[in-house]
Length: 413
Image 1 (cartoon, one colour):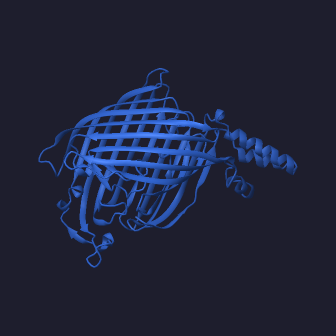
Image 2: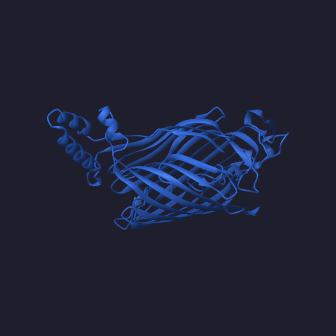
């Protein structure tokens, strides 16, 4: 997947119940001289950004975007996050392309009450799934299939007093249906791939990954955290889940009993007031899931540097190291200057971070063993609306492969 064009426009909104900083500033500006206006505006913005006074404020950070690459063609979409203190946090996305992509959903949502926390990841998509060569980090496309996919991953966790532990039921549903499949090898040049629309139709059974499948599981999830789990800054986050149920698909004559186990541990380590390390290990084991609903490698949430869903299997191991350095704190750029020109725009304050990172991961399966371990090195640029909304642009390089980029809302944790 090679980058040709990228463009995005980030924007933020900050709203307070019963209070409008922008209207207050405009009213004061009619009565004060220029130096006092500047002091008053600065005091107002600092107070607005103070995390001790977040209760009742709704915050939004998001962006429309457009990019193009050799796999998806021109993609246009939008992504962002919404939070309200206390108790609500959500990341969303929607995008599409002329190459068959149409997707949207919630990539992360947490609703917190006094005794419970609801977690949700829900999305639906129509997209072309590709089969890639496995021999190197610059894979070529062999075939593609137009698929309908959806996933619902919902948990309800009961807080165990003030211990930091939360435990409760969880459910996972994945569904994949394939409409058509095509051979995308260029007959005139084996090093090139055809566009999906130019490919030759092949039976769906040519690749097991192109078959229909679904899995429905229910079980228990536990989480411990002594830091903000959606934006860890100082402390630990531990999560585990065990689920059981049924799986079905073209690979099986009758539905089969299935189970999975998931474990994740993360540690945020402050270094200075403006910097910190983030370390994470993540593993998933599945019992009987057929290929279309198996765990995969290649995604900004699990491994940057590889195409989306490059490899798949019932065994997954990954690690991540990130170093955060804040290069600007409570910056008025670009919204304070824009607010001065047009008072309708909110004068939001942002933090800006530079985030070098390293991702490593491997996929395996009992039928074929472990695939090659994949590595990715990169750097991210984060715009942060405190305390927990992030919009980021990550560039990643895999050894002997092209530079890839990832654009979206929320931490890559």
